[in-house]
Every structure is written in structure tokens, then in C-alpha cells.
Image (cartoon, rainbow, N blue to C red; front, side, top):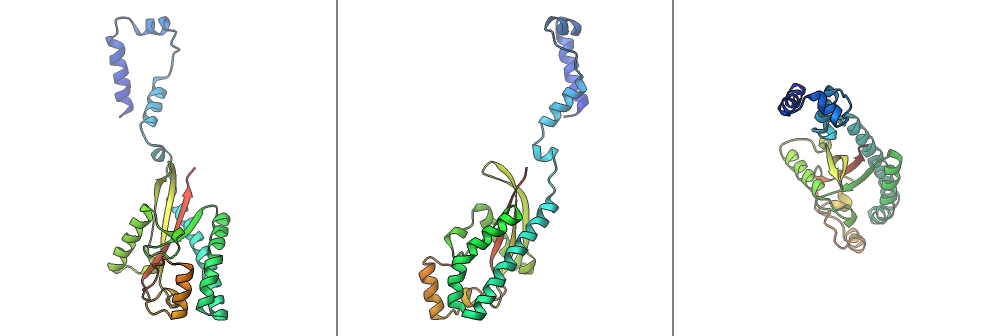
Length: 222
């Protein structure tokens, strides 16, 4: 719609009435109004809120990256210290108990929701939703096309539970240290501990460089 079109429609409608415009204003006690303003309000109402108020996706992306860096760094540091001091079996127990609190702390500190997910998840709480599953599959396709796993990311404005949000995911490549608990040749003690803590575990059989999963971030857009 154009402003001139709306004004034209108004003028035609008025001209078809059996009584003059001034009589309408007097008879129905309609106050004189600025028709250009009315037309503008109508035009604004025809567009979604997201189009009227542009979302700064670059800023949201940068904030998501910062959260991923914070959580990834904290988890990696904790795991490396445990692996060096206690080995892989006790490190599995440590991850089982501290990963969730660390994730919650980073979410609170960053003012958003961050977690990890995977097509082959270990913890049932990390099962991907439909949007995350779709993005993870796209990540696999992008890697198969030659894109480096550590560079793969994706973000977009979406809707979640009736709320406009910005969703972001960053691929997690499988590194050397990951293979102790996620590789295809894990030891029997490691396998036994995984089976005890995660009886439905699917997060094994990875090779170095594979996409083991992804960080997933949700930011509410006010």
C-alpha cells in the first residue's frame, strides 16, 4: 500500500456518500484529524513488528559468540585439569556433575540461555529440538562440502513459545582429548563408566575432526 492510495480510497468513499464531508463531521461529531497520520498508522499496522523495528543480528551474534567462548573455555579448562590429574574415567564422573552447573553459571553471567546439543547426544537433557536438529544436519552438509568444522556457525531470528528470539549455534569439532570418551576405541573402564552414568549414550564412535555437536544459544528479543 502507498500513502497516496489510501488517501485516494478515503476521498472516493467520501465522494460517494449522499451528504457532504463537512456534514459527516458535524452529524457524527467526528473531530478533524490529519488523514496523513491516519494513513501512516494503517501502513505501520500492515507490517510485522520485526520489520518496523530492525533487529541487530550482528550484535546478537557477537554476544552469542562471547557466550560460546566463555562456556567452551570453562569446560575445556575443567576437563583438561581433570584428565591430567585423574584420567578419563574420573573425568567422566566430573563432567557428569559439574557440566550443568557451569553451563547455568555462564548463562546467568551472559544474560542468555546457552547449552550443548548433538545428533548423537550423551545426556538426555541435551537432546536437540526440531530447530537444532535441522541446523545440526546443515552443519554436517557444510562440513561434507569442505567447510572447516571449527568455523561452522549459524544464527537467525526465530520464534520460540510465542516469543521472538535470536537463536545461534556453533559446531564443536572432535579434538584429541575428546576421543578418550567419544572416540571409536574407548577403553573398557571408560565404556563401563559411561554405561553406568548414561545408559542411553549415543555419543561415541567419533573421529578427530568430526562434528561432535554444537553450542546452542537463545536470546530473547525485547
